[in-house]
Image: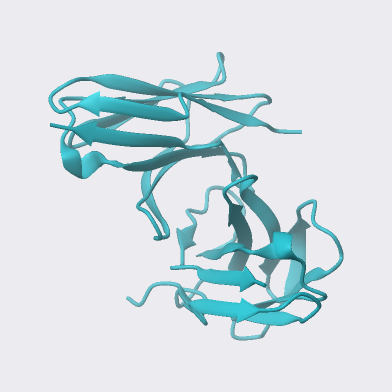
Length: 114
Length: 107
């Protein structure tokens, strides 16, 4: 069974640009969550999508947005990049139903903003 | 708002020794996770604890959960170099993570 995949794995952008990251969940999983990991702030929850709808959202500015497609693949977009957006972005997928759902993490996309 | 605290932040230990990492969370959570992260890598799930008194063991690692004390522990027995990594606990439905414990095991 294929795991969670993320593309691209590495990305370099400059301030003011925008970026789109992609996440393909494990087959059958309908929930995709996104996390940002930085040395200063640690691992922080960005948002969760389930069945093409944003179900939960963390405390990030509106520059961070996402969407989910009918095949459960998800994209995350960051507009007007800032130096502080440099981070490892992780996505995780799960079945997403009620009750306990173990999340499986992808390899991450490392974004560097210059 | 759920907050998760881990200690210690750094742990340097000799091979063969035992140690415990602590994870406290601020509000009720019906689940507690432990993850391992190697440098530059993603998160690997170690344990999921779903009830008070739950104890799980895998190799030299054992995790437990006390929901009344809002405390989980990750106990390392007879540490080996391969256990060197950063360990995170996380609580809640949306995975609120602790700060992580960077473990270094030396000969």
